[in-house]
Image (tube, rainbow, N blue to C red; front, side, top):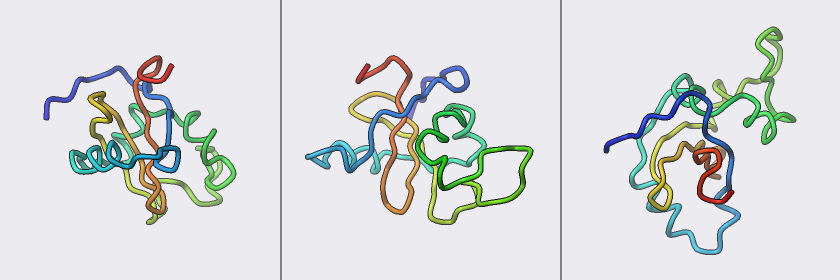
Length: 108
């Protein structure tokens, strides 16, 4: 796959798999995906984006070492792929895919 490199933190949350009536775009995205590390995922998806979705579950404060961090949760994995032809990053949280597309992109 030829990945179009965006500058850091330019992917915004757009949708999850539960938002869709037809699962085909999600299945195609999963089939084309590549597993990535938390560090790579966080280069493109900001803590602010994640905090909006998961702030009540995870601790995103670097100065505070208490609580569970998203990167340490074994129910979470990080991926890059394409969603309907657009490069994306997504995380799988307990088998729910949360999809991040280029900010100002597909659905804006």
